[in-house]
Amino acid sequence: MKKDKTGLYFLIPWIIGICIFKLYPFVASFVLSFTKYDIIGSPKFIGLENYIKLFTEDKVFLKSLFVTIRYVLISVPINLAVALLVAMVMSSKIKGINVYRTVYYIPSILGGNIAIMILWKFLFANNGLINQVIMKFGGSQIPWFASEYGTLFVIVILHVWQFGSAMLIFLASLKEVPAELYEAAEMDGATKLKRFIHITLPSISPIIFFNLVMGLIGALQEFNAPYMLTNGGPLRTTYFIGLYIYNNAYSLFNMGYASALSWVLFVIIMVLTGLVFKSSSYWVFYSDNRKG
Image (cartoon, rainbow, N blue to C red; front, side, top):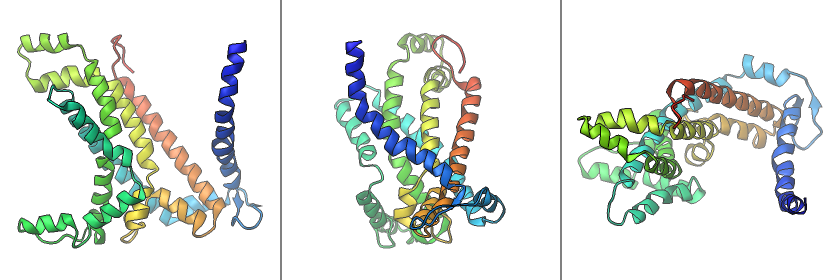
């Protein structure tokens, strides 16, 4: 009992932090979603008005939701594919491999901070390094931040560039695949592609599932890149739902409506994550030969 109490004492700061910075805002946002609240005055209860407006009148919400879903469908699969490809290269026996692993993980440490966003803006500016390289090889200047597909491409590339965390998890899982399976398949004449499809993918499918879920949740809440790089432009083609929530809360001071938007996003994340969990029974395999 004495040891248990000591452990609980160490947990107290964490519990207080969770209650103040996680649990209280979570409950408060749900309550505020039924109110009209401008932050300065007192919340005024309006029932389901925010939700009714959201689904019947707010065309910007539908636009931002469409933009976010499109971004998720493009960025998450590419991020997973790049992370797995690099992990497979990093799992091979190459001289100085630990240095390469560190280098490839650095983008994930830097993340989407302000300095990286400024650097990204300079790289993809009209006279930036990317355009200079393109023109050097005879191409024409690309207005990355002036077109719908250009801006989305820049944001997707930034997301994919931060593949380090998923790569390390894939790398650890690849090392756990029994070598004898590859040896037996090679003796039976299986090509590298067949070994990858029939041995590697099923063996690491639980890790693919984990990275897919984490990537899906993170991409649906994307905020930093569209806020810093495009501010939702041009013509709201990168106006992600996270940015829309932020603008309602801190630009329009419509905290009640922003809270309603947040809860709708929360439900969407839960539904999509639930669908991924449901689908896992068909393609996720565990070491005891049972499906997910």
